[in-house]
Image 1 (cartoon, rainbow, N blue to C red):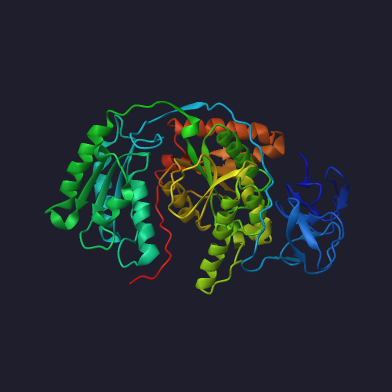
Image 2 (image 1 turned 135 degrees about the horizontal axis):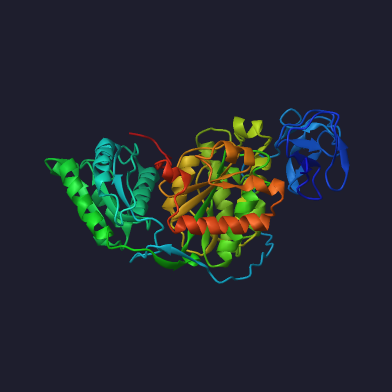
Amino acid sequence: MNKLVRITGKDLVAVALQPLTAGETIDYGSGQVTLVSDIPMGHKVALRDIHRGEPVIKYGYPIGEAIQEIRKGEHVHTHNLHTLLSGAKEYEYRPTHPHQEAKLPVTFNGYPRKAGRPGIRNELWILPTVGCVNDVAQALARKAQALVGAGVEGVYAFPHPYGCSQLGDDQDNTRKVLAALATHPNAGGVLLLGLGCENSGIDQIKPYMGNFDESRVRFLIAQQVEDEVEEGFKLLTELADHMRRDVRVPCGADQLVVGLKCGGSDGLSGITANPTIGVFSDLLTAMGGSTILTEVPEMFGAETILMGRCESEALFEKTVHLINDFKGYFESYHMPVYENPSPGNKAGGITTLEDKALGCTQKSGSSPVKGVLAYAEPVQNAGLNLLSAPGNDLVASTALAVSGAQLVLFSTRRGTPFGCPVPTVKIASNSPLAQKKKNWIDFDAGRLLSGMTLEELGQELLQYVLAVAGGKHARNEENGFHDLAIFKQGVTL
């Protein structure tokens, strides 16, 4: 097994694939380096002397600037490297014209829906319109577990603290999120549960739901009935009876929408897990399917790569606004734009936001950008889409589901148990995590370091996704973990 990897021939640093000790002399493919300091796994080592003020190259791009002289063989991290990023920028459209050969879609067994794409689950969802009825929704979910089976694959409530005391775009986004989930293909039945006096009640949310299948949605206003749990259970029973007619049938992979997310990343994430997801993304989009890349603050530093892959100048302009508008969001709250990476990222070897972003965007593969989405905007274009949402794991994963993802791929170095409203497949960047946390991790991309190729892993991941789409449970589903987090962007009255 190699001990170091130099990602591109331009790089001035290599990444340790295991803990390394000062004094070791190590081959890295095109040369040798003798370590002058210990290098933790996932961290960087200088392959030549790097002068103060010189850009440090990784992934073929600058990840920051040396703030002191760095010797060949020395550990390169926060003590001797800092970001080169600053505020909003002007960009020029320089298309790279990525080409993609079309492939015939393979199939999975899903649930056809009258409106839109097929579902990969047939679940009964309870959506409170306002936080005041969260406990009622959860009480109903507990009682309705008796309905699971014979076509009903699960009953879940999605509590949240919003739906009232909101204004403007903040309130509008809450309505869009709830409407999108009420019409999500993974929900074979939905009970939209309101209180009756909230700002974003049922009457306000309905117009956002479009031409929905009325046989699959029920509405209940708690203040208008004597016993909301009794009435709610009756409505859930009606929905469950209707769902029992549903059966899985072969559906084309061109009908899949898959969200791409990472969290708890390290220096290996951009070498193993994220490129594996990138190969998968290219395979799926070549079949006419769709993928969605989000976490806009973690695109800062790699945005020009994505901009160059935009298939039109209009999409390029939308991407410029995606990036600069999110920087403006930070600045409007007088917060630092580049308060990233996290302490866990740094412990794992990620030094600057450029370092993190260049690794993060590996999930997008190499295919053209076909769409750029506002928060809570649904996917319209097949292919790779960019979505406006923050980096927070649950907020971003929820946003992916809201925009139409039937499942989310989530790469991680440190591991996490959570699940968003749709199956949330965890992909480990390293095999020790996959072996230690088998109750969290679905797929081991660390096998790249022990002989498998990216192409093999990407093909295997495609088959795994098709299995999950066909009914195989992700770990978060086996654990019963499903959560909802709406992006809060305004004042609370």
